[in-house]
Figure 1: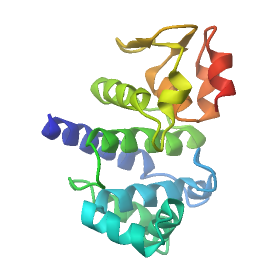
Figure 2: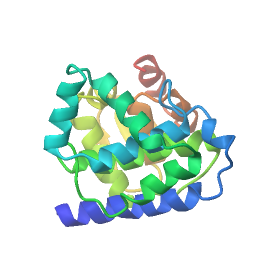
Figure 3: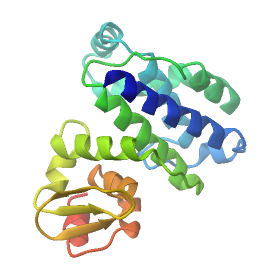
Figure 4: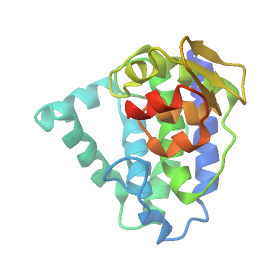
Length: 207
């Protein structure tokens, strides 16, 4: 199964690279869906995460006084480079990497899907994610609260994807494309416009 997950990750990395090849320098400074990060910053973050191993993670975590946000900020600076072209080249260099921070490989699939959306949505770039990647990330996001907060936001709601065969939970319904459901339950208000159902107001109140 792990091999298949890495194939999904590589496929989404390839697609993101293709989408970013013609982004202009001013567009790289667009605010992403991640607070305080531009789309360029998010790509740099994806690069540093792809370079991580458990050993590197704990070393860098300790090096920033066990401050997770400070570690992330330092990683972004390390991978930005001097120009947007440098940032994209650095991401291209990790295309085939199969290393990650400690934790399940599913978290790396979630990383590439969610952060790709953090980049694409503000730039107005549409993308059809691999269905298997979406369903895997949907299931991963609703299982726990660590970092993503998905379980807390999804509890007591029926989540129904309209583009793939995926329904989870019970209660007032939230319907829409699975990528938008994922972005909503991981705290991105921008995705709410794509969603319908009696449960949207509840979800919105949890973001």
